[in-house]
Image 1 (tube, rainbow, N blue to C red):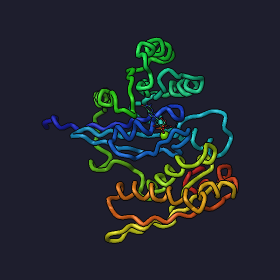
Image 2 (image 1 turned 180 degrees about the vertical axis):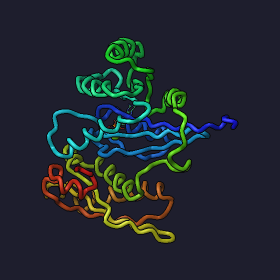
Image 3 (image 1 turned 90 degrees about the horizontal axis):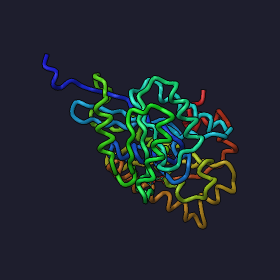
Image 4 (image 1 turned 60 degrees about the vertical axis):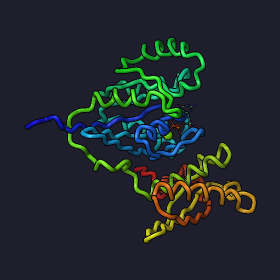
Length: 300
Ligand code: GDP
Ligand code: MG
């Protein structure tokens, strides 16, 4: 048979410290928002997929929670475990670091990666922040001493710089194999899950620095009718003092969260959305296994 249309399919995992820009990069690679981002660490909590199909090639990207050390809560343990397990069985690992900022956490994570049988590319992100590009040279030298990377690719996920080069390097190495998803599918998450993530993203950017780690969103109702999707969501936090912060003076903050989330949801779902939000306290949920399961973080 003529094999000019031989299908190729590969799994590519994004690994790196929290806040280096993995989710921003994933969204750029699939050209859609499938993973929420923020300037605060630990925004991504679950493993999730972004899928890009072009002609005979399908790349399945796996976004992971950023790895971080020194946290003892059940939620943090769950996130670290999810991050490391997602490099098993993938074809390529993108090891993402922040330009000029390589720390012991990166090194520790890299040592975990090196024990696995993967092809690893070093992706140096946020190069838009580096005024003097020659500063990257000693940085690259130092990091590449630690690991035999397949490629070293400096990028800016935010400014969409060198994303095409990165994609080309990945495509070159895709193994032959049938596609795993229909070509128009860009994520494996349900609309319900994406809705909860978008609401969480809007909360994260509007509350202080501590609350994001104590906040979770559960979708209680997701009803699709002809011209309207009705979504009810509950924002869970750990203390009643945090409740006041999320709601804000005269409910203003919650209203702003709801409006911003609704706009994103309408764009994503291509439909009118009615969004109703509640705020509830669930004491110490980040350290409570049954609560974690209820929130959708599958701890076994
Ligand atoms: P993750 O924790 O690794 O998934 O990181 P995120 O994708 O959530 O990004 C963390 C922060 O870094 C966000 O505020 C992003 O806007 C920012 N960021 C991501 N990529 C870039 C980049 O290329 N340049 C700059 N200057 N900021 C970036
Ligand atoms: Mg992330």
